[in-house]
Amino acid sequence: MNPIRYERRHYTTGPTAIERLDRLSEVLGGPTISIKRDDLLGLTAGGNKTRKLEYLAADAIKQGADTLITCGAVQSNHCRLTLSAAVREGLACQLVLTEPETGYNPQAGGNHLLFHLLGAEKIEVIASDGDMLAAMEELAQALKKEGRKPYLIPVGGSNEVGSIGYMACAEEIEQQAWETGTPFDYVVTATGSGGTQAGLIAGFMARQSNTKVIGVNVSRDRASQEAKVLELVQSTAEAVGLRGEILPAAVRCEDKNVGPGYAIPTEEMVEAVQLVARTEGILLDPVYTGKAMAGLIGMIREGQFTKEDHVLFLHTGGSPALYTAPQLFLSGEK
Ligand SMILES: Cc1ncc(COP(=O)(O)O)c(C=O)c1O
Image (tube, rainbow, N blue to C red; front, side, top):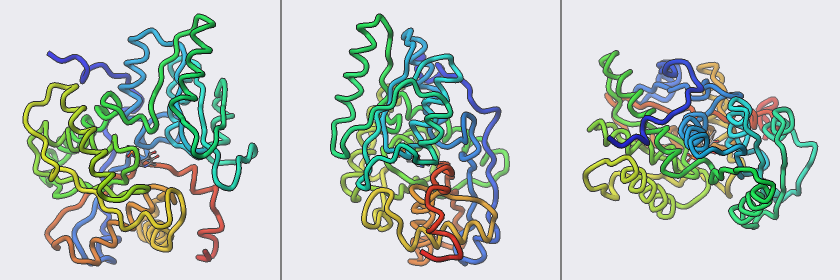
């Protein structure tokens, strides 16, 4: 037996809901759309990182760590949730943040506010093109000199340990599809550091499911994101002892909705966030799920799905960032 799949902390009670989006499906006139509410996962304000952290925190605890160190943008959902997991486990947490183009604002709200509220032990801000891994290693060296035991978590929690969280999610989706008798043809998700998509692909493969995963890129071009995700599917499959060849065709990433770059708003994102809010009363975020939904809407308008298809949109969270950009949504003005 390969124990890695079973070593897990639990931060959410039960599976997250799958809800039918009948009004949105009707307005778009395409396939049947459902949504998996991973925005309602446990830990502070939920989101996809909670699933990865169930496995990463278990690994840290197993290794005797007393401090989690991770990195991300100033509005990183991953940093917020890593800190939240540390709080839950009685561990310290240090963060490396990259300075935004507009400069670092120590008064910034959203996730940045939560870094302070949840009590990050240290926040180090480095240049936007700085080496996050090197900065984390420096923090780790300093802690080791004090006799402490740091555990480094890569950007987005996307390594083979974190990705197992999304293998578990694929199993959960399969179970829910089984119970309701409605399998999904596609799962559509935002894809950034890649662990969510890679874990889903590996998880559906493990269940021999026919469900296909479509990643909607939030930063890279198609070829580089597909290569990144494929590598992670392969290393995750190897880590858990999954047999069988993983073909590049298993990985599909769409890059039409990145816009000018990571976290830079697009008109399509604003339209998607407004449409889902006004048809279903569900809040998406401007950086990840707004662009992912814009991607899904674009694919529907291009006729890429049939009316008989059943598409599951994965809501990966990110709501704190919504409140950092009110000008995008006030009175519909951009
Ligand atoms: C809200 C949200 N959705 C999606 C993603 C992308 O997930 P992944 O980094 O696993 O590709 C992130 C990553 O930070 C996120 O915060």
